[in-house]
Each structure stands twice: as structure tokens, then as C-alpha cells.
Length: 91
Length: 109
Length: 315
Length: 124
Image (cartoon, rainbow over all chains, first blue to last red; front, side):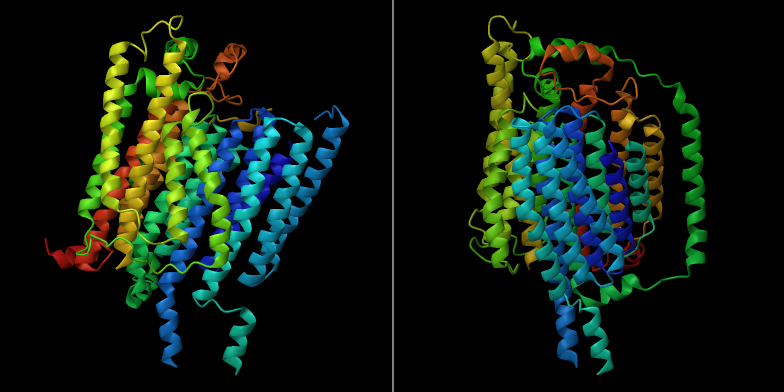
């Protein structure tokens, strides 16, 4: 039970980092950590309920959460690339 | 949270260690200044924390479907977590996010 | 604990309100939908939580794809971040809307305590669904047994949406030549780790579809998991060897089969009226077939949606 | 273990409803209003799930793997709203997918993602 509350505090710590982070990449890092902290939260809930099918949700959550983040990161880097390259060719 | 048998005790100790790790992970987020050291430390500690959590809960539940599914989650997380950190760091570097030290050097020179 | 989670929920939605740069909007939206997915889970509905988690991932991918085109040109980025007008003037303009919303909010709060939902239906369903429709998952029993017409029309709307997206996406070269590459540069790490993850995704999607009527899960969630597999596959082998056209035809074909199966099932009375004593096997067979068909249909639909968006982004 | 007490859930979901309503009204950026369309739908779904609950103790998912669960009747979450929410989420998302395609086409034609500039360009 205590684990539950500690996890809640950690979750909010990551969210503040995600909101406060200066660059986009800090925000994505915050998002990534929130996703993995939430999975641990689900494992705790599933073990309290002691129903094993609740863990299916944790697997789906892990897969879809991370794939969302992977594509966000991929497309962020693609778009700024040409701007960066122009700056390099500039000077 | 009465602890019935020895297995639960070991499980609780390992979960305690996992929580202890994760608190350091959270602290590292705010102490480190630039993005790259932060992502390195946070995702590594995060994976270790998750690993100890899963093993702790596996001890608490003994050999059952619950532990089986826990290990499926463990495999997925052990593969995906570092992979996402890699993608993040690579795309951050690709899109021109210099290290703080490099940036200062650049301006100084 | 749920109170804290819901406060975070509201905070992330407020963050979306006060953010102007589009990149950050998408990240906050992604955080928001991750939190809603956990909130559904904590409120005792794993089926809805799974669907919401997968939809959150798809939504942020679709958003980022259409944003990325907008941001690749330099001037848009500067224009967006420039503070158009002073904060004060912006606030003044927002005041009437703010007053309206806050007023409505307190108005409705004042009337809420009057509503007292009756739980007659819930008791009815929970007691009788095991015998009438079979299977142990009440949610699947409802949307496949008692309310099978809703599912039919929902599948129809999904087909219409996919057809609309494929024919409405504005690009002269909509007919992407199969086998042409996209510019996503993938590293060896991506190839290796996705090779480990992809079989797990497909196996897990099939597991969700097959025993959707026993444990949490069902046609939709399994289909969404399969669609996630196609997205992973795009990351590594980014050639279009599967042509979008015949996947679309596949999807409409499966939809036709769904209609036929439901018609037969209703006429034969498998869904709700066949007494369980005679034919319990028939009921679970019907549930598995329906879940399988819906799962495949949803997987094809989201596959087409995803590949159509990729072609928009490509040129 | 009152971990999941959900007394004032409807206040939270109503608050979110009006926040996103306010957001739709005042959002200048097209993409922001699309995001708020999805937010409003989530708020309605959260309110809808709350109505199905009798008491605020820990809700049990409606999966009855052994009939003994049935005597906790009031704590089991109501399956009916969940079944309807499933179709609502997928229909909502397919609507948003079509909206995003329209946004793409509009942006291609006029090159702006801003409601104000769009009116000037189209001049209607």
C-alpha cells in the first residue's frame, strides 16, 4: 500500500519535469517515464486485486505507449533536420 | 500488510529496493542540468527499478499465471525501455540539440 | 489515489489550454490520454482502458504526421512562437468565453445531485449474461450478444471513415507506387529490438481476440494491437509491399461477412434466445467468430488509415 | 482499502468538459481545436462511466470468472456503459481521423493552420 503512494509522488514528479522541461526532448523523456511508472502502478493494482487478466492491460499499455513515443521522437527529429542543416550550411 | 510466509518477506524487501531506486531516478531528473545526462540516468534507473519490482512481485505470487504474465511484461519492458531512450537521444542529436558544454564552447571560440 | 490522478488529469488539460506551440500541444495531449487510460483502468473497466491506450497512441501518431509537414517550412515555426499580441489583450478577449464556461459549470454542478441512476439494468445483465450469451466477460457479452446492432453500425462507420480518408487525402500522387521507400532512417538498434517485440505483439493481439469473451479484451482491442504491429513493421521495413487498395477491399469483405454472421446468429437464436442447456458450445463459437472478424476488420482499417497518412507525409 | 474512492468524479469530468469547451471557443490554432474535440469526448465518457457506479468503494471489473463474485453486486462496475463506451471511442477516433484529413487538405490549399488567417485567405 505504501508503494502506491510513493508511486503517485514519483508520477507527479515526472509530470512536472515533462511540463517544465526547457526543450521538447525533456518533455518526451517525461512522457516516457510516466508511461513506465504507470505500468508499475498497474502491476501493483493487479497484485492487490490478485486478478491475473489485469496484466493484459499493462502489456497493451506498454506496447502502445512506447510506440506512440517512438513515432513522436522520430518525426520531431525529421522536421527540424533541414532547419539545422540550413544553419550549418549558412555559416 | 501482514506477511504470511518467507517468500512475501523477500518479495517486500526487493520491492523496497525497487522503490528506493526509483526515488533516485526522480531526483536525478531535477539535479542534472542538460538533456543527455538526464536521459541516460533516468532511463537506466527506471529499467532497474522496474526489474526489481517485477522480481519482487514474482516472489510474492510464487509460480502462477500471474508470475508468467509478469515476466512477459518484463521482457517487453527490458527491450522497449532502452530502445525508446536510444531513439530519443538519437533524434535529439539528429535535430541539433547540442550538449550544454559544447554549446558554451561554440560561443566562446 | 484516484483523486490525485484526476487532479493531474485536469492539470494536463489546463496545460493544453494555455499552450500555443503545436509541438508541445501534442505531447500534452499524449500525456493526457495516457492518464485517462489509467483512470479508466482504476475505475474498473480494463476493456475501455485498453481501447483508449491504443487509440491514444494512434491519435498522437496521426497528429504528429500532419504537424510535421506544417513545421518543416521554417517560417511557420517562427510565426507560431512569436507572441502575436500582448498577453493582456489576449486575456481580455478570452474573458467573455471564460465567464460563460465557468457560469455554465457552476449552473450544472448545482443541478447534478438530483440525478440518481437506477441500477436495474446492471443487475439484470450481470445475473443473466452467463446463461444467455455465454462467456465470462460481461462487456463482450453485451456488445456482441444483447446489443449486436450497435457493433454492426460501429463497424459500418469505421468502414466509411476509412473510405473517406483514403479518397479525401489531398495529394496528386495518392497512388503510391508499391515498393517505394520513405525517408525514415532506422538504426540497427531499431531493427533488432523490433524483431523481438513484433512476434510478441502479434501473439498478444491474437490472444486478446481469441479469448476476448473470457478475460478482459475483445475484438477491438485485439485489432488495435495487430494494427500496432503494422506500425512497428513500417519502422523497420518501410517499403510499401502491401498495397493499400486490396487491404481496403479485404476490410469491406470482412465487414460483409460480419453482417452475414450476425444475421445467421440472430435468426438461429444463438445470441440471446437459444437456451444454454442445449447448445453452450455454439454460443462461445459464435463469440469467438465475431471477435475474430471484428479484430481483423479493425486491424485492416487502422492499417489503411496509418499507411494513407504516411503517404500524405511522404511527399 | 479506500484507494479508489471516486466521489467527486463527476465534478472532475464536468470541469474537463467545460475546460475543453472553453478551449474550443478560444483556440486560434486548428490543431488545438481538433485536440479539444477529443478531450470533450473523453470528459463525456468519464461522466458516463461514473453514473454506472453504486458506491464509491474499489470497483471490480465486470468479468465474473466464478459465480461467487456475484454477491458483491454493488461493487462490480456496470458493464453496460463500458460496452457503449467502446463503440463511442472508436467512432470518435474515426471522426477525428477524417477531421485530420480535412485539415491536411485545407492546409495544403491555403498554407495556414490558423482560423483567423484562413478567413482572410478565403475571404468568405
